[in-house]
Length: 105
Image (cartoon, rainbow, N blue to C red; front, top):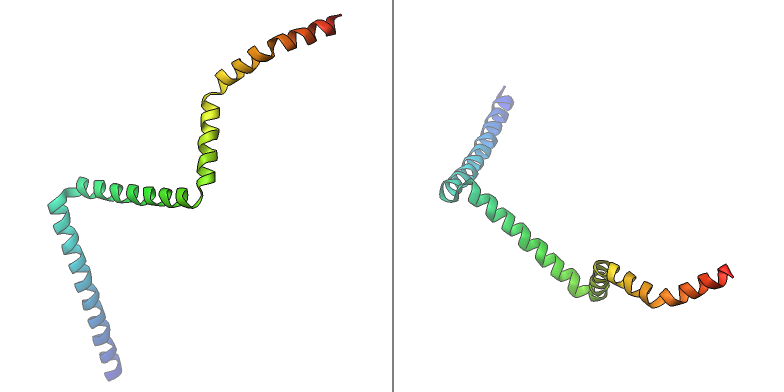
């Protein structure tokens, strides 16, 4: 029975230590919520995540500048696709008309 009693005492000590750690963490969290509020905590967390994402994007851009340049060029071409297509049709219009005339003849 002595072995069982010592095991119960050890388990109680572990439980009390875990409870003390939890209470300490809970107290810090509760004080922080009272100080900043839930909205303040959410805003701070969102800002931290945004900063981390920006830092990662900068790191990727510094290590792969060609990929970034190619992506920007592709986006510009895509945004200007209609004027570019119109310009090509205008430039090739006479050639297409001549070919169509030759096909009719």
